[in-house]
Length: 99
Image (cartoon, rainbow, N blue to C red; front, side, top):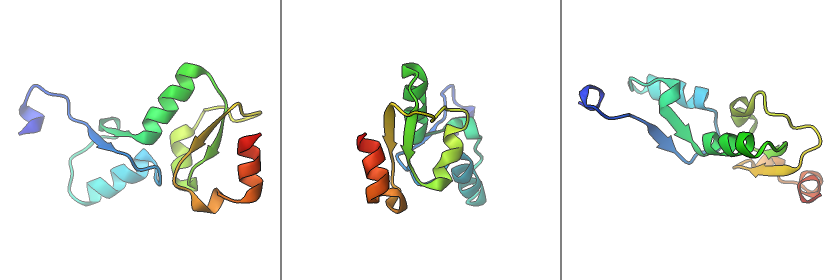
């Protein structure tokens, strides 16, 4: 019914554990008729902000989330993006983030 209504359809989530591509695959496997551009995540919001502010982030996100940041420069970071990534929360990485 939504597809035939004059509304924009979006699937919104606050997950930071996986990329939009992974989410698309999972939702399609559950039978959802969905396109990748219809998915909006907190990673999407973070990427949009990074592009608007033109900053270079240190990405403290799960490796599965990295595809959502493809093309974003991360050399000599001047910002930090934090997601659910316990494997990256160790002294060395936290020290880099605080610097």
